Image (tube, rainbow, N blue to C red; front, side):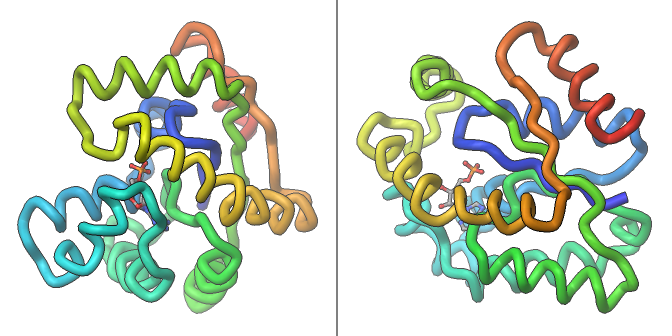
Length: 187
Ligand code: AMP
C-alpha cells in the first residue's frame, strides 16, 4: 500500500507517519529528512539543496525526483511506502505516478492533515526551540507557508480529482489522531 501524507509544515506528518509505518509494517520516507541528512553529509544533492532549504523554498523537482527514484528502488520499498511530505508540486505528483506505474503500483491513499495556521505557528515555535532547525525561524516559516499555499495546495486538488484524499483533523492527542489516521486507510 502506498500512502502519501500531505499538510502544511508542522501538521504532524512526521509523527503520525512514523506511527502509521509501524502499524502497517511499511517503511516511511520523508524527502525533508533525506535532504537534511544529505546537507549534513555534504553530498552532491545536499550541496545543491542547502540554500533553498535554509531559506524555506522548495528544492527543485529534478533533485526531488532523483531522491524518490533512489528510495523506490530499495528492496524495503517493494511492497509500499508511507511518503511523508514527498510530493509538493504538480510535476512531482506526475513523476511519482510514473515511477509507481513502472512498478505496477499507484498511490492508494492521500491523507491531508488539517491544522489551523495558529496551531502551526505555535508548534513550529516549539520545534525551533527543541530541534533548532534553521528553517523553523519565523522568516523561513513564512516562506515555507507561502510555498505550501502556492505550490503544494494545488497537489491536493490533483489527488482530490482522483478521489484519493481523506482529510484527517490533526489537532488533539497524538493517539487520537493516530486512530483517525488508521481509520482513514481502513485499518
Ligand atoms: P520538511 O522537513 O518536510 O519541512 O522539509 C524541509 C525542506 O526540505 C522544505 O522546506 C524544502 O526546502 C525541502 N523539501 C522537502 N521535501 C520536498 C519536496 N517534495 N519538494 C521540494 N522541496 C522539498
